[in-house]
Amino acid sequence: MSTLAPLRGPARVAVRQHRRALQIAGLAAVAGIVVLIGYALWTSHLIDAFEAGPCEASGVSGPECDQRIRDFSDATYRFSRLMTYASVVLTALPGVVSAFVAGPMIARELESGTYRMAWTQSVTPTRWLAAKLAVPGVLLVAGVSVLSAVFTWARSRAGAESSPLYWYEAPVFAATPPASVGYTLLGIAVGALTGLLVRRTVAAMAVAALVTGTVIATLGTLRSGLWPMLTEIRPTEGNSGIPVTSWVVDLGRVTGSGERLPWEVCLPQADEAVMPRCLAEHDVTGAFIDYHPASHFWPLQLVETGILLALAALALALAFRVLRRRHG
Image (cartoon, rainbow, N blue to C red; front, side, top):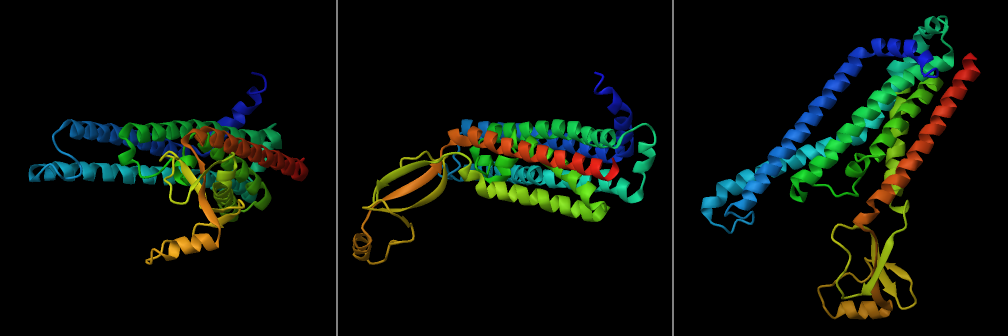
């Protein structure tokens, strides 16, 4: 209790300074939650009602079902678009958070010199920065946690046919907790460090958003290697036995010596006699598939979240070090 007490005054000031932005963000979050829940329940009801009726989505039920099939397809399409937009917004949110913390919250006060008033009111630079980050940190983590949880629930509630993205695709993966919370904390930490280093509002916002976006893109590229993949080796003409929900990372051909070749080697030809000859020339004996089954979702989430938290902690430590060096 005594540790938190010194932050109360500066925290109240931070809330008062940015109350308009916080109110807008809160209203937007509530609106997003209401829309997602409403659309998910409505779409789920339509799917249940359609499946209980005599019509089939394939259209083989007869012309009397055409309108019902059309209404069903339109409803699931609209919801799939909504889920796509929601996933993109949640994925881009850390960059927006980073820009807001870097510019309006940190760099603007350093640029205008208003921070000096706070520091003359028995508020140390360290307490000032801690209060600045505590307010958006608590509110944003709470808001993103709820939004991400509702997003995940909506995807499962409405069914696979209404969700156009798979679990391993970047917009869904980064929008699912706990990774979504990790990205939010990283955005706050990067924003604080950037604001202290750049000290110019517009420039700090741009740099912070760029750095956070680069981290998001980099981790998205490296994601498949954060947990050991499974490999299936099968005959060239055999069918794959991996689950359809798996994330296929790589596939190709295998020679008799175990060497891996690209799948493009010996692509099916119009002349059926060419394919066997090509496979024999390259000593191809089978095919390989490197993949992550759906059960790897949580290990990948936890490893990526751990990396994000470590990067956020490092950025925060550097931010406080920069503040102490420059302002004692």
